[in-house]
Image 1 (cartoon, chains in turn orange, yellow, red):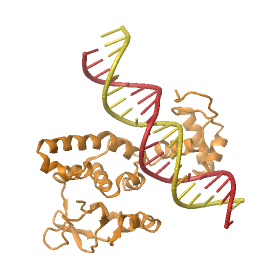
Image 2 (cartoon, rainbow, N blue to C red):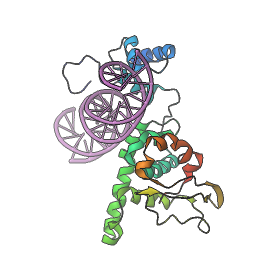
Image 3 (cartoon, rainbow, N blue to C red):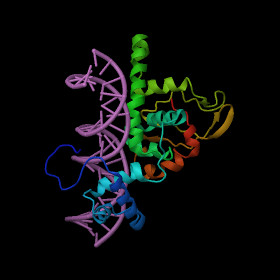
Image 4 (cartoon, protein in one colour):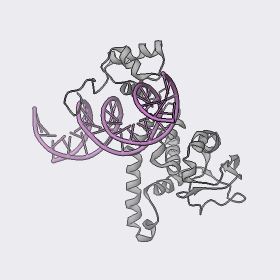
Length: 219
DNA sequence: AAAGCGCTCAACCGCAATACC
DNA sequence: TGGTATTGCGGTTGAGCGCTT
């Protein structure tokens, strides 16, 4: 086990059951913080970083095991469309029990493949179909075909033409799920740099990624 | 049977942000 | 206020496994 062999002060490679047990006991006593001190207290030759990662990705009691569901995948695609690769942890935060590492791996494993398949299908349809689409938007299009979440086609602000790559829409209009009003937009006009700024990142959960925002229609 | 290959996912790395002294 | 420690994140790596030849 272990990679990049050479002299290492810290033990590397996969965690054993014994190491997990020792780490868990230590966290029970001292809490899941001060990782470098926990690493020392365990007596394991692991770095604080390694202990933290093991806890977050594997040992936490609320970790959800098993396959990603259709609903979860749908949400991942939609949030990735909005946030890109930058905020895996935020995406994971919308999926209880899932970790950012898991979401990232899942994206690389499953969804990227779907995208590749979808874009090669687009290419087969000729240059007009493939010209304007990046991989992500292709995936969203594919997903939308199966999805039942749409904005109100009649009254609400038309979002079809909205350019999500540059900024976010101004809207406080309702949106609908299966014909019933499911929530309100709570999105202000922001450039993406503003959106990623400290202020808005800290308020993302309430403003853009609150319960209602799971249902946002991403074009 | 075994060698080669591709895939998956746990773990690591480097960097940036934040907290603490 | 500046230096150091800690935490958190995205990108990357590679061991191990299963499938194919």
